[in-house]
Image 1 (cartoon, helix red, strand yellow):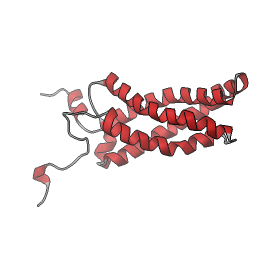
Image 2 (cartoon, one colour):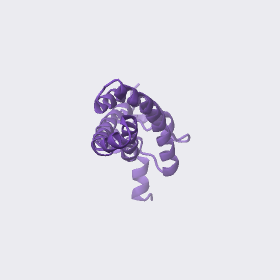
Image 3 (tube, helix red, strand yellow):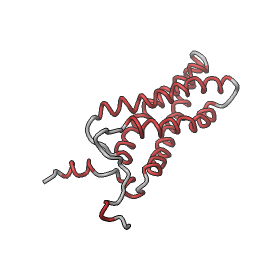
Image 4 (cartoon, one colour):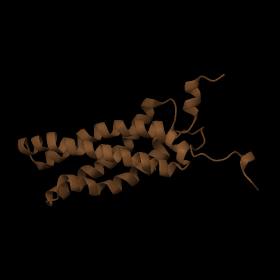
Length: 167
């Protein structure tokens, strides 16, 4: 008899069980993550960013804000995707390292574009919001194909058994 935790770890995440389409589940959880991450960014912009702007310069303020928001945002997103979309078991540290590596690509792009837009006079919060389109696409392909990939396991999309399909 399987332990309850083992059964739960083998089922798709709650959102995926309800929606049955991993792309839509990813977008819903991603929208939540983006909102929470953006709130982190605003918080750090108003605190750390403003302090670094006055203590050093706007570029350092932008990068400091981005870094602080990144750390908390990635940890929040990792838990959300792992729990509600991809629902994998084991390999937590490996998955987190892979997850972060996807976001390192996104933050590298972000770290180049954000100071440039701010340097052109854009408001830092609006500049960050505009960059989200690029980073969202990067995260979908990266997490789907790399972060939570399990070689021996089938995809986590829910499909009917062969016996349930009608000819």
